[in-house]
Length: 578
Image (cartoon, rainbow, N blue to C red):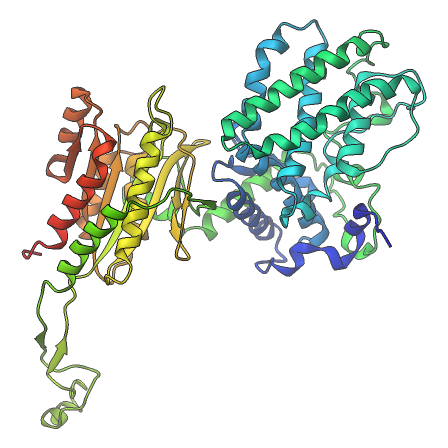
């Protein structure tokens, strides 16, 4: 029997978040903070360029953040799984839009929209927005996120209440197209809808097929061209239809303060098989938007307190009171597989360096004044009543001269390369650390690879090497070097000597200062070396020398990165003075 997927929302067997969400609380601010952290992890797993996810009411521009209406989850705590599934679906939709650069589609369409007559620009924007949802549905097909998206398609936009048998309007046309493509349902309509609807459906396949293009920028450009072509074909029908109704709302379709339907209205069509889960909190006397803002502030405070030992709090502590230009620091695991192959010759040369390092120091005895553990030494039993150090004095050890090596890569927008050379610099950088990871296996050293960039006003650090697999990111944003260095120090284990190799092609231009970060490295006993590519710009070369002093290794371009990294590692790993 074929069950309508929408009915799964009301079935407890399909509450997917119930199977993985463990960090819950019955206290309102703490539970809402837990929900927000879970949603941020979901978004970061899907897209490395995800915008900051916040509850509506948090400071910041809505264009730079994904704002969730906090009223969606008020009522019962812990938040019921069916609500959590709905929120995850909303975040998944926005994450895919970030990953596939839906904002760039709008940028490509903007010149054409500005040239349109009054009213047509908004209609074309609505059509393109629905097209992006159709593309997201295709992009998520086969992934677990598809199950969450099914739960939200019926609630993404305010539904038109106009009878579809009445003379047609453009908004109703786009709604019919949306419901057919996303929800798989069609209903009786006025015959004038049929021909333009056929045109929209004829282009729908091309929207999904654009996902096969390798370049994300190319995909967004192609989609914008498809939407423009669709509009040019359907606008001749729309021009002959009656004008759209006025924008002001009547009493039958009252919107809330943010212009979206209340949660109860958005889910009114979803069957409820667990009435206990929908026991919404009754509003307190005088409760309104100001109370929700106060709740958002409480949740943000709770989030800061629970993340006090997180990377952002530790970075702020490292800078002390000098945090004037500091931005939020976020640490995530990258999820985009790295497709760049290794360089066999570079792997061979690096393996040779690691072998020399491994056997660079002979076996030797380490002397102690008595140990609190180990093999008992009968000559020291008399000390048992004093300090308990009754074990052998000499310990046979083998010093492997191993390091904890962290490669910190600048992944800001400039790493994409110059015009006509797009992607070359980043490809060289990836090939270098792919070769290094291959060569370092079995050497006794611990290797970490991080990339950093600014996105949405945050300093994002992405771990590129985890689970014995290599991942990548898309270079973007500004260069918050200072905060990235401090975060790399905090994320490098302390069980061996620590070295950070920082690879960058320019000066920092956002976030906290580099000088304090270098001082932090000195205090922590971490050896930092910056490999700087100045691209034949003498001003940048002078800035590197002034900023990093003897901690910088300069190159004319990133094409010399493999040789530079090899030379640097040989010098550091084989230095007998350390």
